[in-house]
Length: 470
Image 1 (tube, one colour):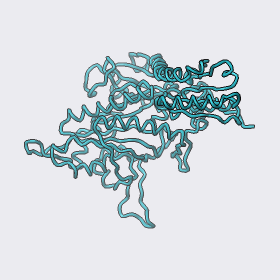
Image 2: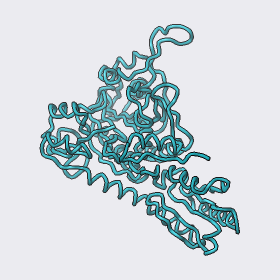
Image 3: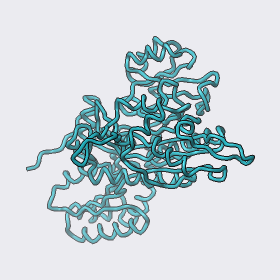
Image 4: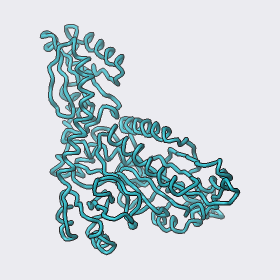
């Protein structure tokens, strides 16, 4: 007899719970090289849907997809000193290939600012070539000392956007457009994850950026997770790579640039924001399977009813799977669907059918809805429509109840023991941020008092969010 699959409760050991979900929901496992991961088909199915949704929004913002090499000449990274300094501890460098030592080492891309900008300098000649908006879906390598699947791995998958503009204002506006219209909208409208969108302090900025904005989410252990970032690069890379253009007067100008990215870390965020002690809870829009029609026993016409229901739901545009593995125990199959976070389970069995009904089970609440057979399709559709809002409201309530307003640095430690601290940025200062970092507390982002994202850290009256983070 197969062993029952049990998940460690979140309150007992959250990291163990997370690992249990990865394994038992068949999402991913460790690769053969420390820090790498193998993403299994179900986990990759979630990532594919994330890719598709984000890609639509990126294209709507005007960027087109391209691809650049995985291997970058080390000399290119040296051109932007601050960028190299920021990434040096994480670089993987190839010094030997083809049976011999290389004359010049090459770096396995940690990000692609340097190689993309070397091509931007060739492609941009005139103001008519601007804005240049490029996105890349790729893998990157950053040598991670404390790996955790999806959250921090040596190799991970992501998209990285790179743009060049004629003016500073245009570049800044585009970086914020990506933050709000691509990342924030995707996370709220598709993942049902409430995020706080703000800018990073100088200490937390991306290497080489003049401004970094991010979307920060609270996980169910109250830690923060950075879900996506958008960087205003100023003219730093343009000067390093001689990205110039002739303006409409014929004068030569340096371009203004942005870069932005979101990665498979979002899969980890999805798990930890919505998951419960039964496993994953997926919003319907991101679930590879939205409805599983589960045949309890293939007797008295139950199989025919189940298949008709699958066809009806597929015709309505839902992603549906028929589970007719009646040779396996019903309980085990039900547990499997809950582990994988399938939003709806429709149980079809001869006993219920004798009374003219089926049972619809919501994964978000685990409530059972006895439903007349003829109404099952309609009820399933309306229930799926409600589940996104339900998960978003629950996650928002959870987060807001754990954000504590404080007025001194001394109160931050206690507030971040089981939540986030919110306080005036003026109270923090550079020395305060250094002091908090000694306790593994970081300033996640800065917002205006009304919660909107500021353009720069120089605005007065900014609010800081402090937390322990992944």
